[in-house]
Amino acid sequence: MTAPFVMLVDDEVTFVETMAKRLEKRNIETLIALSGEESLEALKTHQDLDVIVLDVKMPGMDGLETLKRIKQELPLIEVIMLTGHATIQSGIEGMKLGAYDFLTKPCDVEELVSKINDAANKKREHEEKIMDAERKDLLLKYEP
Ligand SMILES: [Mg+2]
Image (cartoon, rainbow, N blue to C red; front, side):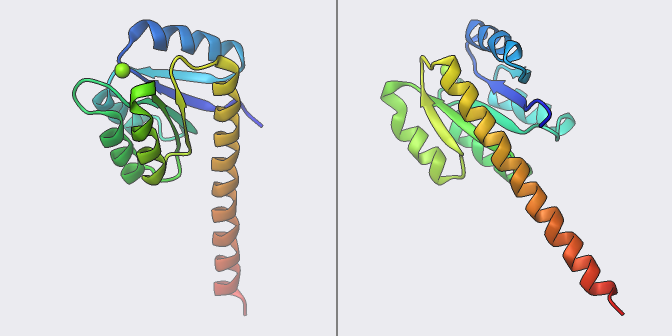
């Protein structure tokens, strides 16, 4: 499998920069966005993203609103929410809105990496199923 392509969305600059370096070391291609708005803008030019790691608490557009918009734009992208201990409820709410999972901050790098890989696998399997179905549909249409 090719390396997962991930976008980290968080308003804490040091957190995203440090985490991005750690993910890159573990063969995960990483893009950074410092707000919900910025992540939606980046989504337009990076539709090949596999996973988005999304902070719940951000100034401006918060994580849940950003999640809704991401899922509207690209429903197959898997999203992992990052919550504080006080905002676990938002993580649960996120899962109801289609997020793959959530982690509480400060999160363990290995745990995040493992969730990213699982989420990327799920997304790719889902895409393959859709392509298979489309192929079958085409075959049926053109069967003599
Ligand atoms: Mg934050």
